[in-house]
Amino acid sequence: MTEPNEALRQGLHALAEQAGPLSASATEVISRVKRRRRVRAVGVGSISVLAVTGILVGSRFLSPGQHSNGVAGPSLSAHAGPSHRTSAGILPAPPGSPRRFACGAMLAGPLRTRTANGLTLSVDGVSHTSTTSPPRVQITLSTTRSSRYELSNDTGPRILILRDSQIVAGQELPASSKPVPETRPFTLILPAKPTPRSLTLTKSQVCDGTSWAEIWQHHPQYQLVVVTSTISLDVPPPTPGIPPAPNNPLIVAQAPLP
Amino acid sequence: MADWTDAVVRLLTERGSTLKRYAFLLCGDRTEADDLVQDAVIRAFARLGATASSLDAEAYVRRCILNAVIDRRRRSIRWQRIKPLVASRSDSPDIADAVGRKIDVQAALEALSPRQRACVVLRHYEDQSVGAIATQLQCGEGTVKRTLSDARHKLMPYLEAAGREQLR
Image (cartoon, rainbow over all chains, first blue to last red; front, side, top):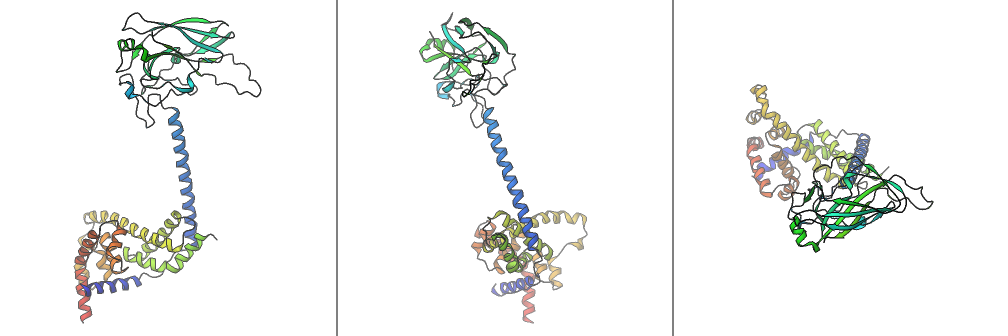
């Protein structure tokens, strides 16, 4: 095949000579390169901005029962034993949207404060009528000055049962994948003295893998938490040099189960 | 003037004709070869950094030309498959008729698939090794050898005619 290959090679070189000179303007090529580079830079910049925005928006609205990869965390129908604990915490609610408490979510860290906006929450007593019933809780809301607060039904006061800081039972726990219904806030006027109130765990739900019998039987392993958040309607004028405190922090009071 | 603009000018003036010959062999059309080279140079310098030299760019430009030709031919082959439905039989090229009319190597190359044509040009015009061709086409060396063999088989009528011409 050497001779045919040589003939082919000669034929190709002869054909290539018929191509003629290149007719392309260097100026036009340079201007098109510049234009393409600009488009490319704008495209990369836009994609970067969109990606960062998406990450910020996604992390803001990620519910407590969801992992960062977007997979829904354990809801009420999911197993919520200690081996299935999630790393998600209770996220501060964005303005205008309710906080969400889901099975398996962690209640941890800086949210453990008993006083906010001059309002202090404490648990005075926990009782239960039978080993299969939810607890009845006595709480006290107290203020140092007479003030008006706006309470919302979605954030309490709400009772949660924790095991190793993980929610295993609670009051009207929403499934993490379902939106929380809008609730109408109501105004609470508190005098400048302790105001005891009684809470019952109504519409209580226990996460899968747990039962009230199990909770009462092994009560030292569990912890009762009352959470609420308020908006003070009588915000004092800001002191010069001191930044104002956030207006709807989560107030958490804890108590052991009897 | 920036470095890369100098590199563009140098590449087009010093290597432009060579690149066009390469593109012309791959596509078989002078106007299309001009477009191929120009598009490849634009793509190369838009993607390469500001310090790209003409030498760096030429290899990238050749790769762009090759990929563009194969992609375009694939698209045109789809058209050729349905072309008999709308065209008369005499419109279709025939390699035997072409050889009978002593048509040149360009017509013979038209009978090859894009990949076969690329292999033939790279092997017999660019004198590249089978391994280098396999790297450029992103396939195995065995595939290149088989493709070259198939191409030679299709070109055999042309090659035999060329041999007879040399004997005269």
